[in-house]
Image 1 (cartoon, rainbow, N blue to C red):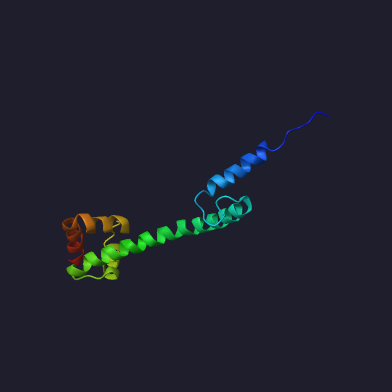
Image 2: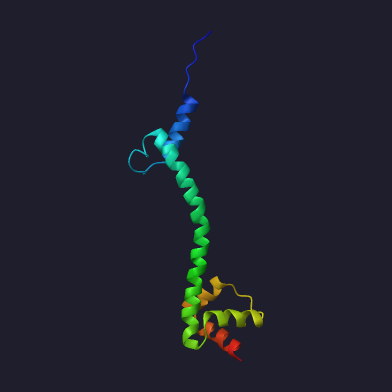
Length: 115
């Protein structure tokens, strides 16, 4: 049988793992076994944090809306309740952007709810 030189696919796999782990600390960036373990943990944290990001943005929007409606003699919960009762379907992201960048338009929305 002719001689078979092995290792190209294994080398590619190892190189791919080490490339993904570039910048990791304490041997996890240049030792294959540690890099593979670190990538497994990093992947689970990345998935969880993608979900957390949505929560954090929604919380931030709520804070911005509350800060904008307080001077107009409303609270956040009463404001959202009035929006639902008046069938105004603006989401919190848009309301927060209006409150931050166009306070006059946001004030008009709040005044229309006060009536």
